[in-house]
Figure 1 (cartoon, rainbow, N blue to C red):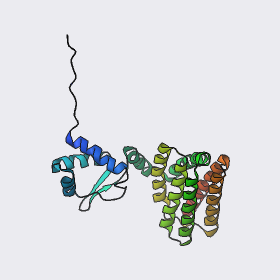
Figure 2 (figure 1 turned 90 degrees about the vertical axis):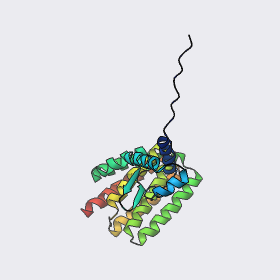
Figure 3 (figure 1 turned 30 degrees about the vertical axis):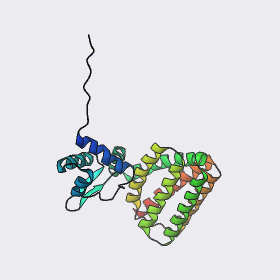
Length: 230
């Protein structure tokens, strides 16, 4: 007797569109925080019906990747489902809990960076550190926090662990939002800058222990500066 052949399952048009739009988000073509093309533009560009587009956008909003803002369009909220879940969890957590998790990740990732960094990584780290120091000197607090985040993201990325990098990128965004308006005393700011310089030199020297120690000290200093603000 001939064996039964299971029917082929073909994804619906809207499901295929979800995958297409998710790839646009994941690839960075539609960065987090930006507004995506209007619905009618998507209909024309993709050659599908308005209902299909709405179903796909609704599915991505349900996943937490998109956010519809009444009267203003649809914005990218997260780059992946994991990003969305972690962002919500971090936003709902105590600041001290977020900083403690950051300390664990940064300490370990800094050791990895020292062990695995490339010359290209070092060029990027030194450039971002110079940028962060320049902005810090201008007293533009929000811009300084953003520059600091970019530097630490580069440290974690130099560790060569894509999953760790993705988790840290979400966490660092939450930290920046929570402490972005912190203005530290001059002495604390100077110590902060010295520790960052020492961290870069430890990574350059492939000093895993030294890099992990300095990363931990940076987070401790951040916690101290945040406590003083309260």
